[in-house]
Length: 165
Image (cartoon, rainbow, N blue to C red; front, side, top):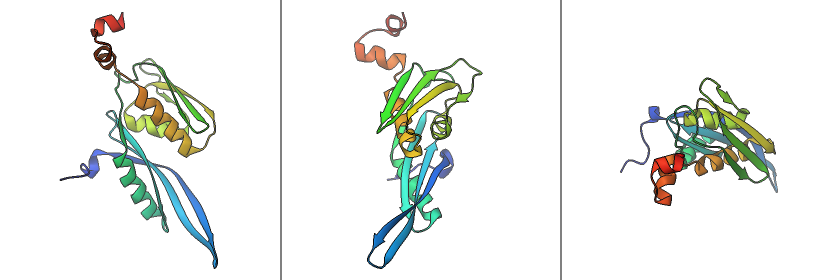
């Protein structure tokens, strides 16, 4: 039973590294927390958190966690099929399809998620917090809700032509 695909299948991007501390009787214990986004640039993307005493170990743990939490994103050519909004905590991420040649217009944390998902043309607007962890999760929530015309037609028991008008 192979749990993970080939390492070369996914690209990874380190979004944030934070130094965190736990106060104990003898003082403070310092550790590092890492946020990593992985994707195959073909419709699959995931994000994960890892925490360890050393940065490389935290990144490795985050990478494993991200591969366990992959999301499938239906793409419509180089963009997404329709506009979608995702919320996580106080972060709000609005994803708007864009014509070919527009590029990825997005802030840092959302940009990493969208580029690794394989979206080439999209506009985004983020509201609320600019915390990278919450922005990544809000963007992933929006991507989870995206449906292709075929998926919508199947859910409604109609043909794709009826859905598209």
